[in-house]
Length: 344
Image (cartoon, rainbow, N blue to C red; front, side):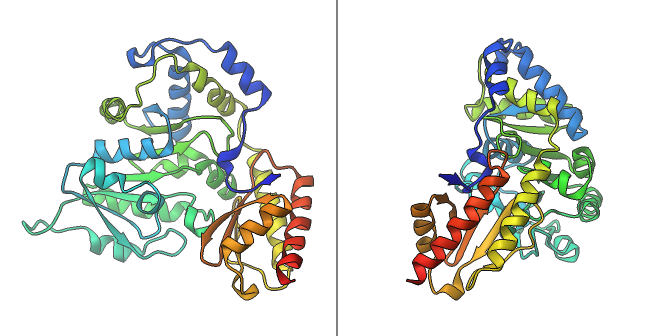
């Protein structure tokens, strides 16, 4: 089975498993796990921030950021297709008691004029604007990359307004490779950034929340409240630390594979690629075939390719480090066979 559902399905390498077995450990709630401490130091340096916090997931990192930045009754400005708005179970409302102000966007980019206009004035009738939110890469747009200059402009706007900017950088390593810009540069104009270790890097568990030292100390308490205070967590930190030490240039292969797959899909009758493939995601449009994404996902599974519905007539396919060039060729053949079967 060729699994193209997500880059979250990657499995730890043999070297990662060995690192887990050999990891130095201690009680991380007491700050005594050397592997976690080293991971947090390296991650902070990579992000260009003073400090970092190892969290169990991207969702936990995002919610710890919201809870630390904001007070109940405040408002976050974000794009209307942000992951935190669509796919995190309403956690910002459930945990932090804040509301979302969503703006239309193009590939995750809200107009600066819209952003500026959405910042609340001081009025007893209005919530206070407590946070501005960006997502890089932008999942719902098919892994599109926010241009560094755009992030800079949003950061400067936020700074002038005295409002923190958070970047949900779950796939920031993909953005870094695609843009040819270091992660620290992509995060320079943000107060905080969250990034996943278990997607492009292929580590089995975990994410990082990075920001200034005082923010991370406050976030550490929120992590504890959210149930993220772990004990001998070095066995989880070790594979992620190995991934950071080894670098992530291999992600360029994932992008190349996505491009090859997208080109092949575009040549198939009735199928179209909806997104400009910038990183490792393809949004396949099935509308012209007259069959829904659910129909396609079911048939592709019968042919040995796993994918996910991403809309009524949209299927998302995601390349990752566990998918070889040979498997991309096999996936193309199986998608073509699926098309033949569905056409009858």
